[in-house]
Image 1 (tube, rainbow, N blue to C red):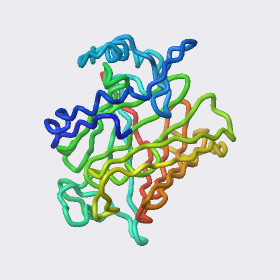
Image 2: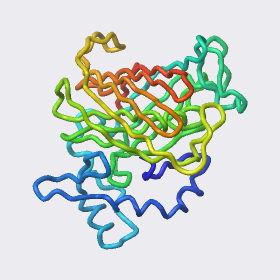
Image 3: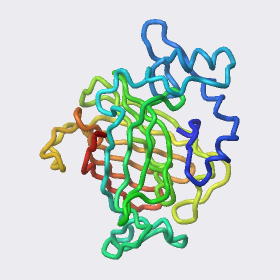
Image 4: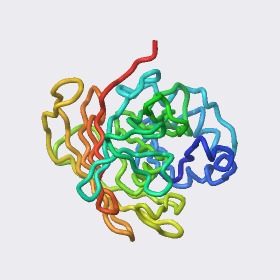
Length: 286
């Protein structure tokens, strides 16, 4: 969500200086009957090591606390979820090239040192402002590319929600629906959510705007499907999502498996392009 801080390699110091972080709880509503708060449109754990301090006006919290990870079933600290992907525009398929400032694209057959082969979520211990901490990394022909983010994932018995990767060309996914599913898993379930997006995600390569825009998103679990994956054929719940803002409409079809999480993501971007990502490996730290 735009209210959470994105800690990128190249703008770490700048973003840390933003005081907007502490406004995150202006709309937080505690539930007396459960261990959750409704943070905008996503349920997350109420954390004694975080929320209780914010409520008293503290500007510090225990980032090492694992409270928000205790009921994770999929995104467990020490695991890394690696996705292959391709980007498709005007009938051609590409990879992203972080060194190409003009188009951001590279041929799938011609890969340079900064061509991104895959991206990953590496789950970390501790918390990121009330969320499970995750390192978002990018892999090229010589292993890790020098770009990364640290951001948050929310997983509990109410829902599962995660940020997309957001370095360079991947920033276009900020104005698409985020991967999000609610429990219990029932075909036909619908819900809506909204997200404000600042113009630091604006770029001539997909869309330009000034100020903030707001995604209004509609979601539905439309059915179940058997999906061929790197882990074999998996039963997945299919979530169809559409986001509308002043620029137009974006979409996401996500395929959710109860063991591996989102195994396939099909984005329809604001400029009519597509990005398809498939989970290809889950690594566990030794």
